[in-house]
Image 1 (spheres, rainbow, N blue to C red):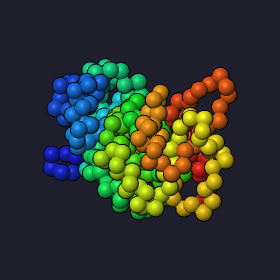
Image 2 (cartoon, helix red, strand yellow):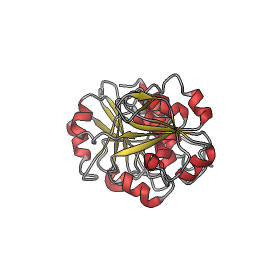
Image 3 (cartoon, rainbow, N blue to C red):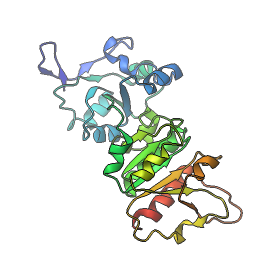
Length: 277
């Protein structure tokens, strides 16, 4: 379950000191400065919970190490025979001291990031994509990735102001699907929307505007490629982004409701588009 000094495999390694340099990847996970360093290209990300770690181990991401409590070690024992990554075991108290908060689920893993794909390459193999503008709430972003995986979205394109999909909270809320749904950044924004159109996609802007077409009535017969544009919670898409869309659609709602949570709106729209075209 771990790598010994001679390069061979050894069992789980006990961590008793929260300052042990071997668990440096997990230090201060709530520290905003650390988060900004990682999001700026720190080269790795942290996955949390046994469900997310299981999904991580099915991907091509290289796992750097795993840090678990004894209880979670037992729960993950069937997948933690890792030839190239050490498995560290710590008490809940030590893990809390390392991370800076209480890891209720007692399971963390650090893994290497991939370089971001060229949007043109990502679009080449896709037929349904989500394009996100200013979605900077980590939980909303994670839920959008979970919805995308469940409802037929092939890839996610993020404007430069969107949060990091591989931030720990986003990965956790996505139940690991931020690791399986391809994504990249689309810039300069919004001019790079032209790349999406040039790849053969119809740009569909989701907006609450009354003059938009109800999404259930949208005519997309024969359209092979659709890019659904979603804006931040509250302000929605900027007007200059909406102007670049080919179609504007809205989700019909009761009169006493003027908006939906962006992740909820995404799920409804993804489902509406899933088998259309």
